[in-house]
Length: 292
Image (tube, rainbow, N blue to C red):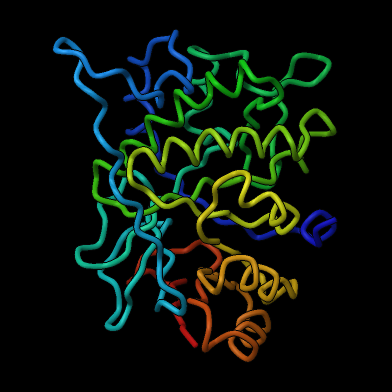
């Protein structure tokens, strides 16, 4: 079992996603993901499907900045950033697009309740199951039908990342099953992640495994290409991610001790950054940005 299950985990996520949520309201029901990705036969009326864009993987030991709390001009020498899907990519850098794929942002819960109420995970009293740390309702990945329907919504966000010019995507809260009170399993979330990975690859995006060291053994089956690991130095997990992904790992530490340990053990191999807990933009009072 992951250390994160026993120790409060300092995952960070953006607070501004409401503008992008409205775009999914026009999605209709019907076609399954397997049909979406199936190549149609070439006919005069229906030409062959276009070849998927090439997926570009991040390089190992990139100088990385985690900007999901608000975009700003990267420091000199930074070669890769992660930004919220509502932000624009940083010109000339390797850009990872953050999406909250397994939980509902607080300002988006009303939209989910109105449009897809049965895709919110509910307890025996029909109340939404909530991640108390971030006040986010969990999305229900427990059946194939629900996963397919969720993938239509979240898949639009993935496509939006590609259209905006990102090279990769990091679906957050892969570990939501640990907060589900036993209503979700690792297998449920792995199956949903596999749908998202297929969607991302079809759009030409690499897919990052966000945290959840317990999922490393499933990485190939799911389709993950690299990792985004928060506090692996704090919890002595950086080596696990480094080995699994040939050092294609972006590490975010929030505490001085975790940052020091990550740099001492992996500073020459992985892209490691220390950020403030609120991942605030440069210029704010709490802003912290350090690299090894």
